[in-house]
Length: 299
Image (tube, rainbow, N blue to C red; front, side, top):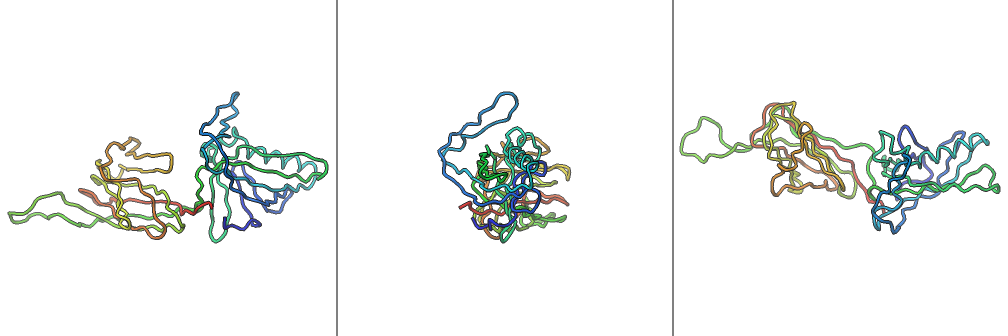
């Protein structure tokens, strides 16, 4: 991994987090970050008495991530507080009850040439106790990766189109006959940059009025199209997907079954991705937005 291990980094959400390599009453010095290959099975095990889900055996053959370091407290009181914080950030019950976490997955954040993050679920913490080190406390945080992909901390966003769409095909009325008749197509353009080195999942919003909306990545030729109609600006088609989830909804109602043949849920390639929003008809004020996090490989 490219980041500098001596720099400040954080693990967790705003409600339950630890900051490494930051001066204070409790100093957590991070000394290693290690992706590991582990043979794990694909089940999440519900535990009794509301203690959360311990998915200590998940994702066959995928990567675990270990954060290892040493806690340097000022005194015995902060020693106890520091151990409590380490146990809290590794608690399935606390992390899964946190509204800012994704089923217990939380961001591990750092900065190298740009701000980056890796989503992990802390499964448990090794906290051996020994009188030989005094109140100095070694620790290991064993994490499961949601995806072995590093993401930017801030999403790149762009607007496809503006308040006035332009005609890209069809025929205006009145016209002399004979003439081939067909649906009129309108389109508008926009672009977004994936600053990473691997493909990344985008999300889209299409705001009406528009019929049969089609979002095309003109850089690759891939597109997403739905045979549905957004009658006004209050109708919004929201499309989100990643490695294990998929949603396409208009005002909260699924329209997955209206996806047209040939369209696909594509990734954004590294670099500039140019987009076109088109449809059978596009009314005044219709547009779309695209959002995505730049992506880099874990190793």
